Every structure is written in C-alpha cells, then in structure tokens.
Length: 110
Length: 112
Image 1 (cartoon, helix red, strand yellow):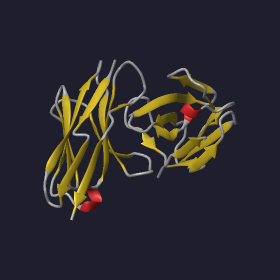
Image 2: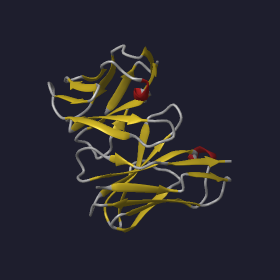
Image 3: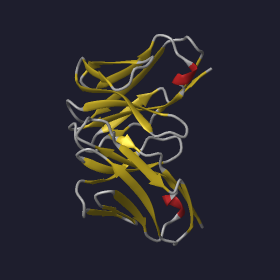
Image 4: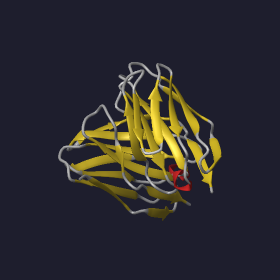
C-alpha cells in the first residue's frame, strides 16, 4: 500500500528564514510525486510534479527535489504570503488515486 | 485555459437528508474526473473517479454515489446523509490517468 508521511506537521519561520519540508514515501512503481499548496478553505493548488530520482523543479522561492525514498520542498527567503499548508502526494502503478500526506502547515511571520 | 467549478461552496444538511454536489470543468474535453474528501486531521481520500460519461469507479465503500451525465459534469450524491459524511469535498480533473490533477474550490459539508 502506498504511504506518504510529511514532516514537520507545522513550521513557523521568520520572513527570509529558509527551510525545507520533507515528504517520505513508499510506493509500488512511482508514476509521479506531486506538491500542492492549500490555503485555508480552498482547494489544493498544483505546484510541481517529479517523476524520477534526481529530478528538481523550481518556481519562485520554491524548489522541489526527489530521491528514491523522499522529496524535499525547499523554501528560500520565504515571505508571509508563502504561509499555507503544503501537501505531498504520490501516484503508483496500482491505481489512479493520488495518495496524499497530511501536509505541513507553514506560517511565515514578518 | 481550463477552469473547474464546484457548488455549492458550503452546505449544512440534517442527518438523513439527500445530497447533491456538482462539479463542472471548462476548457477541456474528455477529462478524467475525481471526487475526494478531506476530513479534519486526515489526508485527502479518493472517493470516485471517472474516465468517461457513465463510467464511474468507486475507491471505498460508503454512503455516497457518483454520476457523470455529461462529459464535463460530475455529481456526488447521497440518499441519506450520515454525521460521518461531514467534510470538505473536492472535485479534480486530469488529462490522463497518470500525472497531476487540478482541484476545484471545494464544498464544505456539515451534517447536523
């Protein structure tokens, strides 16, 4: 069974204080690993897809990386508007569902 | 560009009442469609997916059903709601069955 574990559950950063979020996963035949951003009361917003170990993708202050067992979402010099819950999901070869972790709640203070 | 709509945005229903949530996608044809539920403190759980009109697959046994009467319309229903049906319901679409899924704004359902 596919499993996704995200850590930490919550993270508080000062504006400009860089950090990383972790997503550990077990999956049968990885089709893709996905990162989403979710604001309170809204649907998840797609950020990145990673397909194979060693792959990296960047968008503004965010950079996602992938190994065979985990993915990191690096946040460089975050701003208060980066505050949100970040969700990680995997899709394996056993089905069509995205299997989500419980998310990391990020708060960036001025 | 593609847009996904859900309504209503919020809903408060008594136990035992029926339910109908609607999702529509614009700007694409023959999308794959999904219903997820997000409960407090838990990850998103896939409830149903559809690869075409009239084709529905259920991922978990439950009190809910889904239908796809048109190419870009997906409906989530229940004949009698339970307290445990409360949650945040999200519709999503994708171009293929592998790859990223794009989510709608969600419906917050409270069963009282």
